[in-house]
Image (cartoon, rainbow, N blue to C red; front, side):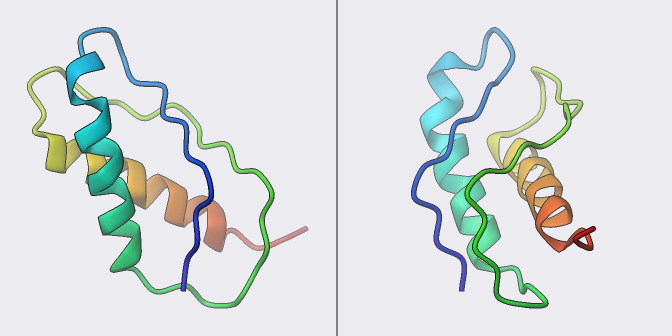
Length: 77
């Protein structure tokens, strides 16, 4: 189970009206993903993701969710 207390997305200019919907879609995408082990993470930064104005909200959300999942599943050092 994944619990997100707070999420802040920095989207490119032009996405202001879509941000709330994309954030909900990211949460839904993450809710459908499995994670290898339980962890408590206080903060997480994801490298910049290439998105384009023509991408659907669903495509943007999927890319963001996959990047978040990748960061969470990264082996701890």
